[in-house]
Image 1 (cartoon, rainbow, N blue to C red):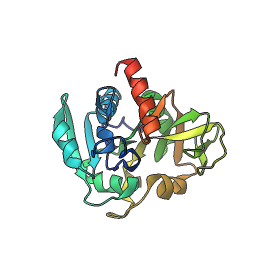
Image 2 (image 1 turned 90 degrees about the vertical axis):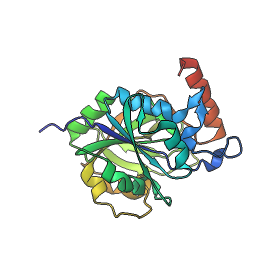
Image 3 (image 1 turned 45 degrees about the vertical axis):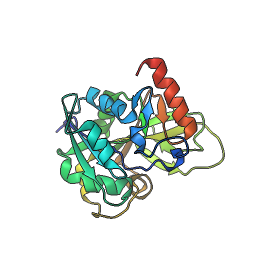
Image 4 (image 1 turned 180 degrees about the vertical axis):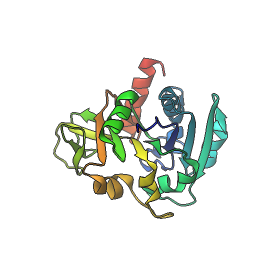
Length: 238
């Protein structure tokens, strides 16, 4: 039986944006204005294009700012919230939001980065491999800031290489996933866990897939990358 296309997306918005505090007001990082509007608006518009029919925003630090901006319906798209009272990490945030996430699988993406995604290709890889998790990947000239993902020819993830100071070309995790519900159901509730470091390495083998995306990949985690994001989205008229 072919899995249905996910209809719900969780966007992780709980980060404090510590590295940006010197240049930005005291707001959640996804609410930083890029090319004239909150960055989070761009991500919500993107998932709508993928056929997503409901968005859950996983909030934390100053989550009331996000809730006041988007409400429960934004551009006719239903919006729900899962607000943490304490930082839970990326995997902990997914587990906390699980009661809000319907369906056998759902999309999860980081709220502080953007990647141009061919969603039909990502979903096709997920179905072909029958993965429990399928990651969007992007090729960069220097993986040293991110760490690399090693991929087998059939699309299964072979392993991960941690961040190193040695610049080299490779594939990185773009922070966008299709995830089967059972993966998140198996996690303990209320525990701080990193999806990238605590969960994904344990899934390496025949249940973790990856698919190379066209990009670009843009994050807003540092003042330098934020400036690059501003330039990119201003040029395309975001």
